[in-house]
Image 1 (cartoon, rainbow, N blue to C red):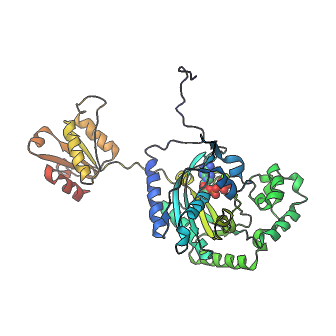
Image 2: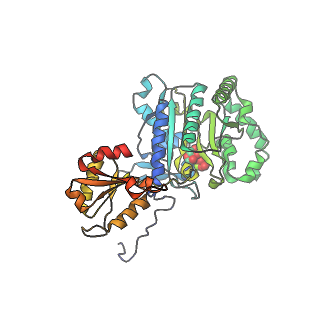
Image 3: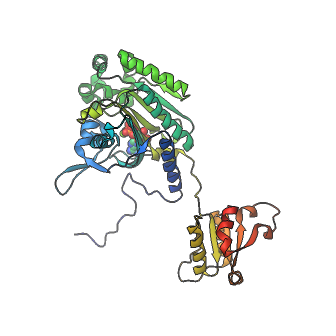
Amino acid sequence: MTNPEKTISMTPPRGTRDVLPGETELWQRLESLARTTLMSAGYKEIRLPIFEQTELFKRSAGEGSDIVGKEMYTFTDKKGRSLTLRPEGTAAAARAYLNSSMGRLRPPAKLFYMGPFFRYEAVQTGRYRQFSQLGLEAFGSASPIMDAEAISVAVEFLKQAGLSEFVVQINSIGCSDCRPGYRDLLKQSLQDKLPTLCEDCQDRFERNPLRMLDCKVEADQEQFKNVPAPLDSLCAACESQWLTLTQVLTQLEIPFAVNKRLVRGLDYYTRTVFEVVSQDKRLGANSTVAAGGRYDNLIESLGGPATPAVGWGLGLDRLITLLEQETTTNVDVYVVSTKLDVALQIATTLRQAGISADLDFPAAGISSRSMTKQLQQANKLGCPLVVIVGEDELAAGEVTLKDMRLRKQEQVSPEDNQSRVSLRDLPNKVKEVL
Ligand code: ATP
Ligand code: MG
């Protein structure tokens, strides 16, 4: 039985956050910028379920990945099905691609999505248990020019969002032809060091040695400094893919740096992998804003036809932390009146004409606060225009329109920044002045 005396904590669950007005404006700006940037490059939005069969993530990200091994929010529904809150987007996008007719259309299918993702992680700045990603996936092209496009679209979005000081780290981790040879080389060079490495790496040594390079333990990273790099063991096809990619990125003037140690934490990556890393110190160790790569074998491993693909995920929470806090945008018009119902009526008329408007609500009752208090409030909110409705004006079917922006300029007499406008003309007049 629940204890009625026990108070419920008002803080949200660990690793989740309330995004409040003041910050939501920045989210809205980024979400709409994401849509325009990606759609202008021919990507279309896909909306996917928040939970999926657990098996989907196990099969795609791989049992050995941190996500599947440690971070999933998995639950059983009332019929005993094992479901998981999505920890990432690529697997579900691939599933939806296979479940639809997208594959029959002329390739490639260029898709994007935005929304919440869930991972049970150690919470710190830039690392939450519920976080938001913008994701992009292109299915059906093996061309390295497609990799370049995917990277360039991410860079364009980040630049337009206002992020400066970042670099795109790139690497190639080879394909199913050259990876086995590289894997052997890596194992040979690490064999002696194995007992000194962390437990996870000892485990990865047999199962997926490449992922050892992604280890977060510093002492291990020291040991990996001189081991052979996948980039130096590429087959001819991967090599030519890599050369084209670096050439095209140079042509596009994308700020990139080759990072031979870069591998991604998920099993499905092939060839190109990349991360967009911010140089800003605020995110500490979590300075990777976007990450992705090519995953040519994923669709096939889910039971579909061989379909090359490339994609990335971009952490919107991390981007928000890096962007300057923006000032809240408020409504354009504040309606100030001694009669609240009239103020509401005028605000409604303005809203119907597509103009944002608000009024000053008292804590209780139907009487408005004093005109001075209401004007002070309009000023505090930074509304550019105020409509003043006094008793006598109302009788004459007129209102006073006051431009609050001019008030801030010097030598403007009170009469200069206000005019009498008939109620009928108000919406047009407001549009004119704004
Ligand atoms: P990391 O190595 O930092 O754990 P990852 O390889 O697990 O990153 P991806 O799965 O590639 O990350 O996710 C893509 C992007 O999503 C990351 O670069 C990051 O910006 C963001 N991201 C991932 N996990 C989190 C999280 N727990 N909280 C906030 N953002 C996250
Ligand atoms: Mg992670």
